[in-house]
Length: 623
Image (cartoon, rainbow, N blue to C red):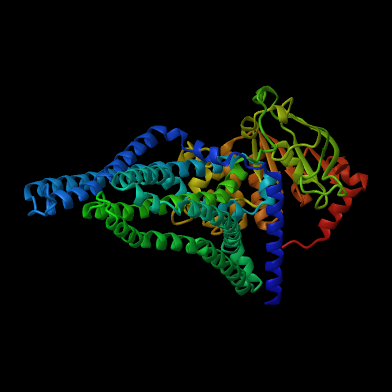
């Protein structure tokens, strides 16, 4: 258990440091309020209609108290010129009650329309924000995802955007409706009695001041709560994936994972309670103040009547307290919206923080498409590269590397682990940006080419084939959505997996499971090869595509790779030298530099690094 706690502490510390680095790299969020308002710009027409409906509803709310006054003074207790109370005026009472009921029905019908429009607009704004954030993250460079946990990114999309849902869906209507209601109520109260109105609003500035102070505290707690949610989402994503579960069960650490989650869950609960309770005493104070206000009004009304103020009648007093009671909800609503806006500012800042990050790899304004006549020609011209998180005292991953690949040539890159083999493949596809020198593709620097055009000409098969939790057909059509079933079968035949698929009960519609765990490693690789064949790109990059396979699977997969390599320029990044002996040229890397280059036979004759690696692997037992 002690080891589990230590692991949790290390992970939590790493998460915090990664987040601090990310926050420091992202531009500061400016003009937050303007940016939030800009989210509503595409829905100006809907918002205008919504505001009109809110105004109508608010204006209607002015009349019932005034009608109440007339019901008492003219309907139930009419007086003559001498001030004597007469019998109720029933016809007039019927008319007043009819008007009141009509106004209430109209107000509620308009309110339903307003609620629908508010919900629709707010959720569309939230949906736009979620899609915009997702689209922006799709444009980020690969390095961003290698240093940021998937769970943290998921939390921004789900928890942060979801956390501002109330503000987006209710703010406009709540602010407009409650403001108009408060103003209308204040005007109505002034019409009834300016003296009582002055008393009713006397303490409002103090409440507004306290609300702003509470908002600052809640905003800070909200930020801490979202950070905790990010950590919980990351733990969930890591621990409950197929790979995470397999790892935990293999090492008997399932209980440690549960403890790690429970620990963060306790922190989340504490923060949620703190966020909920922060300001509750303030709203309790507001409610007590508004609830006791009628008693104060009655008391002062008694003093005014004793002193001969004839304007305060029974109807006036009933109507005034009715208006004052109706003032509670809109006033509380405005204070809550102001508090929610302050609280949500931290969440909006986190969202805009991601949106403000500028991808380090972008198309130039004058980016060109790939020159089809020279596709297959690749050149590294004095290329040096180090990863963004590398320290200054670390050696570059690649240092002054130069080579040329001709169209249709099969070139293999081999060498010890960490020599920079995979990096070369990433730089060709511009998944990372070259530091110094040039990577030339079809005669053009890759930085001058449109990324979509570049990647359209490259097919990649990596060591770990990624498959969606979907059918085989759907996974294959990721390469070509319009591919026919026959084209899928042809690609599978070329990758030596068609017989295996046909033997499955559901055939090509078989669901492969998360990350393809229902298939063997060799089957996943062959399916990935079929997907690349279906893409039919003229350049093929094989990134250690057989290094994780047993001997039998390797042979089958290698046959599929040989088929996929036909009539293509092929770059093979290999650990097992037996898979690239037939290459036109083998380039040996060591410590980020080219140590040797030649055919298999030529390199063996050199008796250099390649020969050493070959001898070591030849003496290793194979399963």
